[in-house]
Length: 520
Length: 63
Image 1 (tube, each protein chain N blue to C red):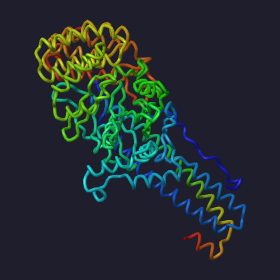
Image 2 (cartoon, rainbow over the protein chains, first blue to last red):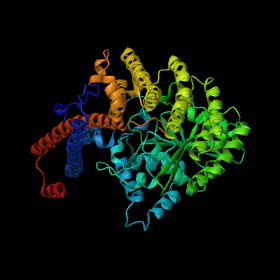
Image 3 (cartoon, rainbow over the protein chains, first blue to last red):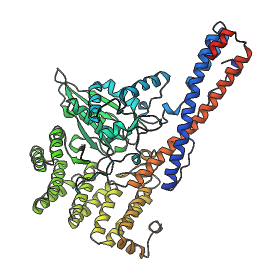
Image 4 (cartoon, one colour):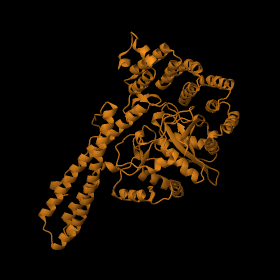
């Protein structure tokens, strides 16, 4: 640019405070309105930039004999490249920001090539199955997987866009997240960017399918706050290479997703290499426990049946992922129990395997004596696992299964003595909420009320320094992206409990010392 | 995010808040981008005004 015209490209202050509406209706309306507006403006801006670039190139040609003008034009072109186009960039500046790439014009071109190559259309593929095979045939290298994720995928937590089922395998297990099928994830595109979208589990499920079709032996696994798909290969020297497809932890914003690899050292077992890989990247939402292969859960999405399973596991069980999946597809629960019993024999200290066994005993309506034995085993083991976050989640889940099967009283016996111990270490509103549900289920309204008041007090006490996590309470920095406080989460919990149980609501409302929170 | 108790509403609110935040930032960025584009346009106009184009140049420029 000519010196007298040189003006600094303005930068936006990303730290400025942004107001968001309070009620859900206002929020969703605002999102829709804003999205329409921004998408329109984005397209217009991109078009203008493109036209300007053509104009500058033409002018350069026209004034090629005037070095002063050419220099000015080069500077103008540079300024144009400097302009941040939100379409191609993200704002997250924290840990993991390396995964958020700002695309320049060349990358934008490459993205178009990738979108063209990989996007599903009925014209290009005779069936959806053929499309999955196409992905499997083409996404064979780490580099290609990463470019595929970079250009076609956008992390998105907005579940309302998906029509995934609420996961519940025949009334005995549950999960709080909505999982999309591999096809749904890879063939539905967002409006603004034409990319497919989903969160960690959606991508993990998609890649479990793709990698399986390649004959690899992947397993889709779940750790607190995150889900991934991993696989292990052995090289000619007998060393293990571990891989995971990772969308970065949920507390990161807008990662593109990445396939990560760790080359094991000679003498390392595959379990060690795998554990090292998963622990090598930051999982901010899981600050309380390192990933431990003895405490992993395995996830299963059974395409075509709209059924998903989430099974507490250990690494040995993960190695039998495809055996398990085949049985789950056929609902051969007897075989699964046999596998679990074999693994429990090998690893009798694994609390996860015992919980998994209990889940399948419940699923198969085993004799109550067997179930009771399992519960006693598990309770004894939990006492040793107070600080284990996976154990807490699984305890919560176990209590839920028991309630589903009508063992409400037993669930309270299981939960009540333990929850006090857990809360001393790490207060968990989710666990406390389950306990309240159980009390209400037993028509023990007084205990339910006392328990709810306890949750309220804990949250109020800690409100300054914490925010809610979906499964409990985490330090504020992990959840500022979502802007959800523990009070918000608790308000939802208490509202649904009161609305679903009119008798409990009536009981609570006649309380003299009822905190204002409950009246709202 | 597997074994977590469902509370769909707060999940949706969290997603919506996150999204609105992102869109507002995007919008703010676009405003800046448009301002900068305007400045570059003005500069190009000044270059054009200062320098007469030949017929060939004009053809190239308009191409």
